Image (cartoon, rainbow, N blue to C red; front, side):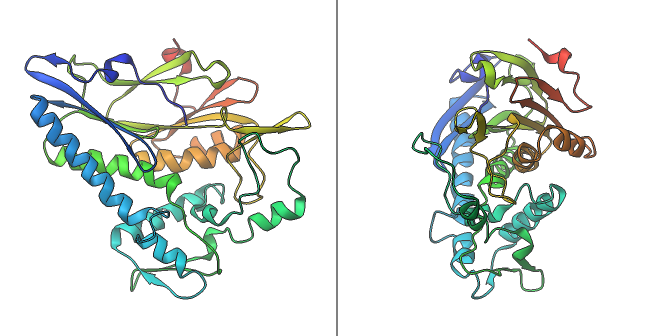
Length: 328
């Protein structure tokens, strides 16, 4: 994922009319977590960001699949054995993830964590995996094998060895929850960045909206468009740093969970939505679906917009975005 934040957001604190922009950056979820809030002073700014960090840790300890004590890890350990009762927050998040799987026809699938790691994008691969190995790698993937029981609020994975991984939706969910928590605690303005999942509310202390820029992967040093984020969010998925090339074909690190083959034809997808959770999940799904099918899907979804950069560097936008209006 790549994103660009204007320099105004990179300053630890700015003072104007008795207000301060207070910023914290820490490593959480194995990735950078950044938050900037507008507060009356640095003391209040620290209080707001402390709340945010505590909330991230709380959710991480519920939904992470690499912390062995979380509810999701327990669901994974009992795959093919028995259903596991989970908290309503976890149950509802998984249920919403399955809805995105249905909308994207499986291009987004939280059971992708079951995939065998046969593709390497660190330069060590010299030959493509065999067709048999690729097919076998996705044998345990399939959102239709996730059994959700509303009556006892339990989750059961039908296949032994099947696993859930909420990384493709969980970071967006965390950004939304942090925003909601801070608003409830009277933080009137801020911007949350959970490893590229960005959610903003209110305005900067200069009265202007928070803004983000989209980088064209074909020219990583240039921002080709800048967008205001007014009580909305954006998430960008890209393959321009992790890929392999065989027989002149570029294969991205984003794998189609239905086929086991890397997605092709797209190098970057940016999705705009009111909720970062939705933008997060859809960005991955659209990347896998490709330009034509991805744009067709977005144009049918209310309140969702996207920008896709294909592997030729051409920029495609959904119907609700006049790209010329935002181009730098």
